[in-house]
Image 1 (tube, rainbow, N blue to C red):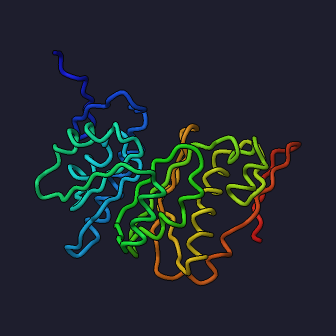
Image 2 (cartoon, rainbow, N blue to C red):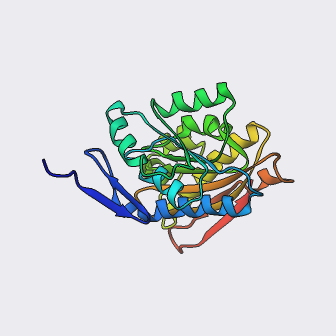
Image 3 (cartoon, one colour):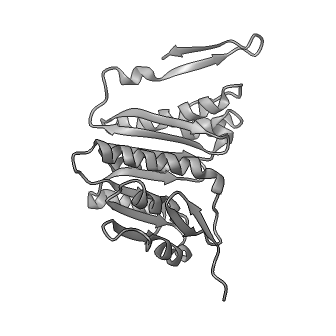
Length: 250
């Protein structure tokens, strides 16, 4: 019997399996490793625990352990058929890295973390569609000073092509215009910020980027909001006649 195909990225060698996997998403995984390494470099010998809520084949979790200086990695996927693949791939983690595997929905995973009082220095949610229903629980799983790294593939509503869906999911009536990708990222950041404020917490934006298919945002969770932090919310206007764009605070 022939060996299953493998894929090499950074220090990781994995079987990708039959599920969804995009090699072109490597920059997003590279940024995740950079975020984890930054946390490790900034900590005073503290742990860097990573929760990969939608692990797929486990390549992000593996790279966090091999390259991101993570001390513990929890990889979860909703598909129970993925568990043997995750076990094989994460067997390549160093023995010093604590590992945990699970198969459940992201909502079940995060609710369990809340009940058990588990917190992580990095929570990575590489979601399909809009993960608005997961934001509050996922923020609860982030330790103070830790990083929340969120992906959203719902570009249609966030870029103004489905305004009703944008109101439901992001609380904003997005308009389609030349800066649609930027607006989608701002809506995602606003979604995170409002959820954090409702919890009495604050956020520090770290990075936002998109290649047009997925919109990704990383923020650091603060114990308290900064003074007048909510004043960062605003409106963006675009003139289709002259192309002028203006921002106005609420």
